[in-house]
Length: 393
Image: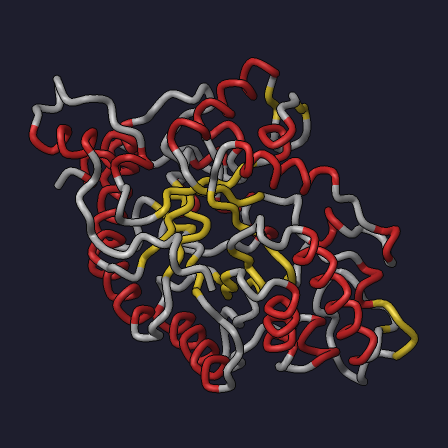
């Protein structure tokens, strides 16, 4: 575990931050996010392929000209000191086909190279997930158990436990091994906790085929592939007490079994209505009891009318919670909620990383909800000013 690179205390920011703290806002130097929170936590952002490769794109959810991409890149370099990949390290993107010849490393290589060139703290996202995993990973000759329900779109004959464990191991050793010493943090397992009901774990094909130890095995393989990497378990909806209790129970069980979980990730896809400061503060207080660094991994705040009082990250429901237009006074409410969240993050010294899930509203997966600090033209919104002001309190 790389401890030397972590912020270790609530040190005062450097000169720019100190001047900002004592000068009136109208004459204070222009602070960046990374400068404002220096000494407290890394300030990160998820980047897409257009930024990593410096190329325009026109697709279903992203439409950026070269001029827009250039501005996006400049914004990343100016404001942030940590990056996560939105998609290009997910299994379906990096290994769409089986075998050693089934990898497509070019986009992921570009992402890592972007981070190295710009001296950014690099996160790898994600190794094992129930989503965006190709069908071939789970395919085999074993029929599903009688009465079992398909855990995702794949419903054919399944791999055996031994086959799936071997595929997991090969994938993790190949991907983590390729970026050993370059990617400092890995989301090893993503979103394995069940959202509702009494079950601790989501009924994924990983669980159904391998069993509950699939999580421990994934962490074991990742640690063997890069013993120096920081390994984290990542999930969403931890603002909700029932989900949080399950999350804590899972991580405690893994730690008790000496599984190398080194940090915990709280995605924090929230809304302008919830959580309150007290709710977020309580969530972080309970998570701190695990004794691990806390990473806010996928921060955004939905201002769409249909997305209020719902926290989560299910891709299937994303469209339905960004409809109906924005709430009344959306800009001010977005600023107020971000100020509240950052106030809570700053209150907890175990929060070591805060990562926004997207550079601006124009590339956000929840673009219709106006969820980020910058608009589609990379112009700072009042929410940005609120986040900077919170650092100066």
